[in-house]
Image 1 (cartoon, rainbow, N blue to C red):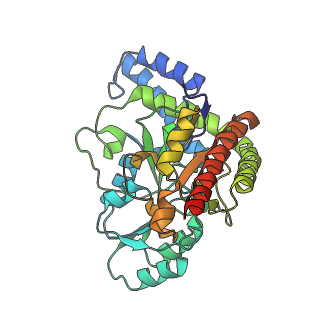
Image 2: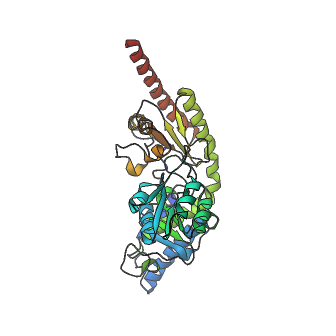
Image 3: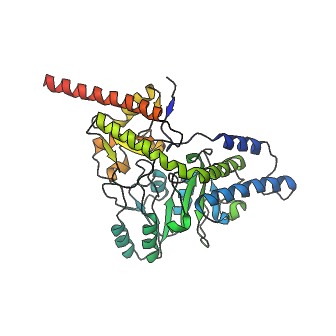
Amino acid sequence: MAVDVYLDHNATTPVLPEVADAMSEALRRTGNASSVHRFGRLVRRAVDDARENVAALIGASPANVIFTSGGTEANNQALRGASGTVFVSAVEHDSVFSAEPDAHTLPVDADGVLDLDVLRRELAQTNAPAVVSVMLANNETGVIQHVSEAAEIAHEFDALLHCDAVQAAGKLAVDFAALGADMLTLSAHKIGGPQGVGALVLRDGLNLEPLIRGGGQERRRRAGTENVPGIVGFGVAAASASENVAAYGAVASLRDDLERRVRNAAPDAIIYGAAVARLPNTSCIGLPGVTGELQVMTLDLAGVAVSAGSACSSGKVAPSHVLRAMGADEDAARSAIRVSLAADTTPEDVDRFVEVWSDMARRRDIRHENRRSVA
């Protein structure tokens, strides 16, 4: 059965029609943005317009926006381009852990919130320069971190603070200056833009070693001919996200209704991070005794798309490192799915999910009862 209910917006969002139109127009343009003739200048203007829109989404300076191939490259550039001992929260995206395999991991509590006291203690014991990476909102649970407080602590010890805001942008109002971050990561395909383009945003005066060397593109901070159609699409998506971010808050009522009905269907269901601030669209649900993989497949067969953990690691057998960091045992971490809504998700979409998921929970209970009867 074809998927007709898409509830996996944290994995990727549908490309907005206006984004597709703008990208199609950009593909028909001839010219290299580095060329000084009229054709090149027109392309450069399109890139600069997009840069302004992306900067405006988070209240940053356009001159400090570095376009990349996506959030993963931006995270790598932030952590590998800055020097010093790296500290990362235990619930960061895999691209952060992989960027610096020797990073020191900072614990989170049972709700998935970074322990700021440990951060302060670790930095106090570090003599060398340091970089701290704390995501704004978790991709699996939606839990929101206290980034501005973490930045204050980092700066007390002359450390840099990097914030992966890939999941938060477009769903929350993000103010780069208020966060206090030195570096911030964005990705186009999480806000209705194309896949394969993102940005690393720097505070004024911060210079990093480039990952990719070559020409003078992106002010010599990221070499290579610009992905002009992708960047243009990113800019249009950012402008749309800026205009519609306030409407995203209404999604929380649908999410809360979904979680209430899930708990009614299976009182032992676990909603991870429910006690703290989360993204309005994200619900991480554990169904004890049923693997997340089986839940995803069952829902998919019924035409409902969700995911088990991060889409970037959906092929892995290992349990979610995010849920393990929150204290879930291995079986519980393997039994969770992520449901992520959008501003245009309908009550009927939620009804369909709850119908299929509740039936799955009932069949689980019947199996358990039959086993007890046999015993």
